[in-house]
Length: 211
Ligand SMILES: [Fe+2]
Image (tube, rainbow, N blue to C red; front, side):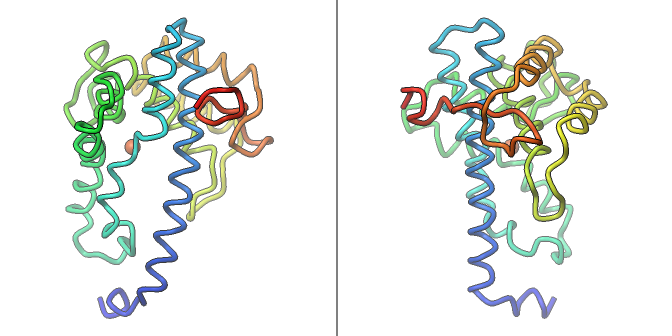
């Protein structure tokens, strides 16, 4: 307990800064990948673009978890914290709901941790009751998370990421997963290091003319 209290503000700031940087990179990757998966599924340009926005913002609710981002391993209230972390999709929805975003973007964010078999959160929705945008984000989010360096492990190789995802296929809409696999196998140029996974020029940046 003492050691947690003694962490200096400077140290806490540094930890938080590193996490924010990783979160931003993660958002860009999910955004670009979600756009391409939506395109592969034959969705219209407007919907693809909404997915790019939702992908960038999907974890914004974590901003309200900053007290938990710092030193949570030492906190004795681990179970309570986990419950709180699981609120981030709802918190994200709350942050954005009066900011002019479409229902499509808001629902994609609210349900991006729902699993296809009904084991996710916050509402235990299953199958087609989960909005399509959220089903797409679910797949892209997991891929991006496993494909990037984390403080506690290095980025996994692409084959390993796909193998782990297939092990957890119950979480995903198969139609979305197959489209995602096709996108990944096409390769491209992207925000993840080349040898690890999928890259592209970005749909949420100026690179291809999109805002
Ligand atoms: Fe999330």
